Amino acid sequence: MNTPTSLPDQKKVGMVSLGCPKALVDSERILTRLRADGYAMSPDYEGADVVLVNTCGFLDSAKEESLAAIGEAISENGRVIVTGCMGEEADAIRAAHPQVLAVTGAHQYEAVVEAVHTHAPPSQGPFVDLIPQPDIKLTPRHYSYLKISEGCNHSCAFCIIPQLRGKLASRRIDAVLREAEKLVAAGTKELLVISQDTSAYGVDTRHETKPWKGREVRAHMTDLARELGQLRTADGTPPWVRLHYVYPYPHVDKVIPLMAEGLLTPYLDIPFQHASPKVLKLMKRPANEAKVLDRLKSWREICSDIAVRSSFVVGFPGETEEDFQYLLDWLEEAQLDRVGGFRFEPVEGAAANALPDPVPEELKEERYQRLMEVTARISAAKLEAKVGKQIPVIIDDVGEPDEDGDIGATGRSQADAPEIDGAVYLRDVPETLAAGDIVTVEVEDADAHDLFGVIAD
Ligand code: SF4
Figure (tube, rainbow, N blue to C red):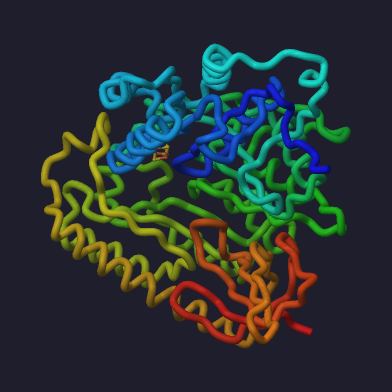
């Protein structure tokens, strides 16, 4: 007899989650709450009593994607509740899709859960009340996002996140560490620390201290990094811990030795966005200081393996050929390991829209192509230098045997965060290999973004 996955009259909720990893964390939290209230999850539109669409409203293209997803959910199911960043624009959503049942904004967990209760009241009963309440994770079990704060105190000209999500609100450090400990105990091998501005963690709470494991710890990025470095997985090794959205404030220097000691993954995601001082000033970027190249150099002296990833925007209003060339020259010197490029896109409500001298679309495209060429060349050379070396790789996916019985697998090196960086493709892996395993790989080949290899004996 098959075990039923839900009770007969249990209400089911479908979820479409769009946007960034932060939105994914919100979706996980909402689903966890709903599960605790007795709801089951529906993997498809058909079986759902109500469908939640967690939207992204950052760029106009993301808004279009969100509206399209809402439209699809309405035509496939008909009973749709909208939440997430685009929920702040309820009028635009209702104008496009008057049938939506409710619209709530980003991080309004209570409001979205209440809307589900109203439109698909939970089943009551002794069995439902006894349902265990595990946390729901939308990311694979071997890696997890750890959100440490919401909102942001900056006012970058191209960004409306502070309007959407409000000022910086840091979580208590003991709550963050408890969540991290729980995730690792449940099998997470890699923690991805996320926020809008990880370096600013705790600024709003004046870095309040909380007791943790018999000592006082501050809500501060360096304390957090040190404590996360103390965690151990079931096999006694530290989990990989990646810091995302780090601005190069001076205290970032203090986490580099933890990387050298193997307590923190030697990886920093720093969204530089540009290099030209003039453009950075127009963008109103935080921690915009001239010494970044020197800092990169000294970080590499302390931890030679450190991988720095960043993203850059080309075609920001007022960006001249000289500014753009400055960026390319800077990149040649900085030798970043991973780079994401974006063409500037005006976001409704952003201050940058009022700036003079917009860059024509064709020029934006041309600069984007040039940026990608330079960064692909740098990446290819850096990856080529790894050929012949042995590196740790975390396995994401193990394939099926081919006609010869050979099995391939996909993983990532410490320089690759999930979803945004490259991959390591493995040949001839044993069939016992599983997602989340960390193995030593001999690198045999490389292209511009990925590595190829085999598990070392
Ligand atoms: S630091 Fe700037 S880009 Fe990042 S969320 Fe804050 S305002 Fe937006």
